[in-house]
Length: 413
Ligand SMILES: Nc1ncnc2c1ncn2[C@@H]1O[C@H](COP(=O)(O)OP(=O)(O)O)[C@@H](O)[C@H]1O
Ligand SMILES: [Mg+2]
Image 1: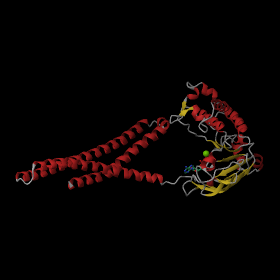
Image 2: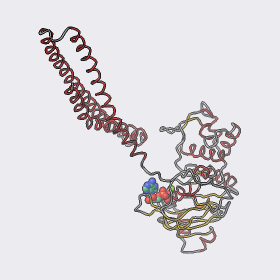
Image 3: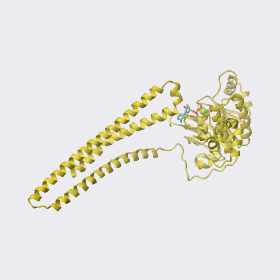
Image 4: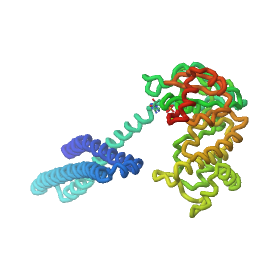
């Protein structure tokens, strides 16, 4: 029996690396499926469907082989166990039979041995499978633990006081930020925005504009310095209470895989149908929705992206109108719209944002000439700040240079 227990222990322990490798192959195959489905347009447009099929086939085959090897080694272990049980049983029987023949034991003891043997082997088998499960789950727990130990990009600090909105005055105080702890993407940035003002942030692609929005919406905490909103350090107020006053429209917002109604009402589940419809009318998307087979119940979003980029963006604007936030961040919010719709949308946005602190990132400099302040960012640092009139008065201004370049083809984005 001791040999059987040892055999079980050795068999299960030896299986561990094989099981881990098979799990890794399964994850590899699943990740490949997710990645190719997410990028299915690129795969198709680059004529790589057959390549990805082949890769999927190779990864699936490796996973299948891993499973097969695990099964095979399980069968070998079972066979060894069965042989050990039979040999042990025969040895015990022959020993007892000799005793019975010598009248040292009786048939009752023989019966006891038979019952003991079947019970004991059953117990050893289930102990073996329990041991295998424990080893497997211990490994899974270690993976889960390593995920749980990853530090979040922001500390939600649930115990922090609530954010109290007091008009929406914003101050960046000597703020620096790095995504990876090495390259500074934002460098010693300081500026102030009064409550209700409109501010445009402009600069070359990759200069750090969207990163400023990510810091303002607290997807990341600064590496150095702080952001004060109405005098409250964003790192020391509860995240949810702050985000409640914040409305964000980004260039590449992905819609939820749900109906148009649910998508537009996502920030306020209790928004009435009238509210949703009037928001969609304001965002110039109502007519398009009414032409869809299921109108407001039409499913959109998900990996396939069932609406055009412009329609997507207008739905996100409708969502902003439903949310009715106090501070608005617009990151290339109209970049996917055609010229006429873009002009109309800016007229609406200007009305909507009146009195709300608004940050605008846009490549179309003509749309920000009336804002209260323009901040020019180059490689993460502020190089210019002022109104449109102040900036163009400076003949050396890079803002002025870009404004002139927009008449040709080079624009900021
Ligand atoms: N999640 C990220 N991790 C690491 N680097 C990033 C990340 N997001 C952006 N960056 C880098 O930070 C810099 C600024 O990016 P971003 O703020 O998006 O620029 P933009 O001015 O075009 O909006 C770029 O060099 C970009 O490669
Ligand atoms: Mg950007």
